[in-house]
Length: 173
Length: 408
Image (spheres, chains in turn orange, cyan):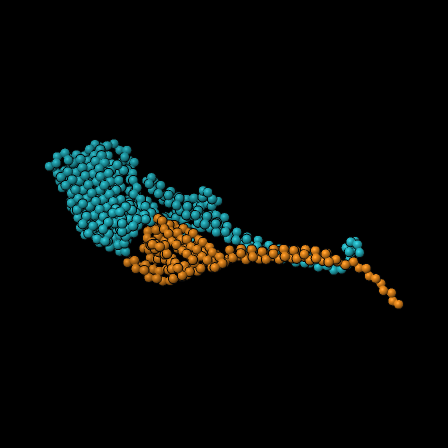
């Protein structure tokens, strides 16, 4: 007759298992939460730095600065409602008169446009190009004081918004 | 099984591996966030540096221009002493600026200003020209043209800018141009002014150019009498007709002693007169500048502290027919200039504190700057556009930026 050996291996009790399970759930949940939060934070930060709204606002500010700073303070036109501003500048150092114009326009269609063209001696303008400076525009207001022109631009792509306020002095005579 | 045995157990566990995986994931996420944050920070620093460098470059240009105008006003202008600076600190920031000025071949000066901040450097360049005090045909706080007045220009040259009349005022009716007034050029009003409000009867006058407001206040600076003339001993009062060939200082000019006698003051030389008191010409009296054939250098420059009255019948007879040969500068205390005689005058009048009145349909060839200007009867003002061409030795000139550019 075979002799049965009684195996007296120690096992986990139900309580121990439950405690361990709860602890494991807490730890895994914590780790998951941290990972998810990191991901969200990374996405948020990435959006703040590289989203189209931010890059558009940066491009718009640079474009506005470069055009207005070289403009002549002698003559410019501003819409009564601040929806557009038109400045004049010299094509190059040899120009004897203001022979170029640039007009920043916001028509309420979500884009900021820049119209460029030539001006002849009789002040007759001829448009040579219209470029879209940026999209996602929800509002854009131009103002002027003395030789300074200001642009207050707000962009929104539905998930993020950005505002740019920039002022430039028109340096040319 | 006791604890010791459990620890000695060779059964494989996975906890360490799991913890390591989690740690690596967290480390990667943290590193990514830090990298992103650093990029953001670097972009912000770069942006701020660029703006700071640009401001420094602008400041350099402004300072160089200021120094040049100081030298010019002091009458000590010399191409051998042009402003120069390197690494001057911009107050309130860590940026520095420098500038160099070099004369070019067209009587202009090339100014290059550099601004540095951190790793950013910005350079702005400007071509500086000299502007005189007669950029406008007529300039005053208050201008009134009666019906029949014509303002036009000569010596304009092909492609030249049209004449301008202007005011620094934004008050309603600061420029009155009634029906029958013709302005063959632009009309400019004060900063922020509404041309429909500032120009009274704008619709009635014939303005061939455009109307707009000034971007910045037009300077009407005081005139300084040259030191050598100011310190000269006074030669008394001129009361009778005479010929003057040299410059000098006088208490007054009053040719009214005998109202029935024609007194003629003849200028036959390059003459500057500093008159401390008033200038008064009576009926039939005459200021005469000899013609260029007689003396090509003949010209009169008057610096007047008192008031000026050219009475009915008097004559300003500038035979050279060059308005530069008869220049009147009313100093700060000159508050009234009246031309009661009719006829033609070749002259420039600059008296920013004076009320200037032109009676009897005076036809003026030159330009006028005053505190107020009234053309009381139909007359004409013909602007000599060549007055825009000035040199560093002319009275009241200043450097201005004519062309400006920056490296993108």
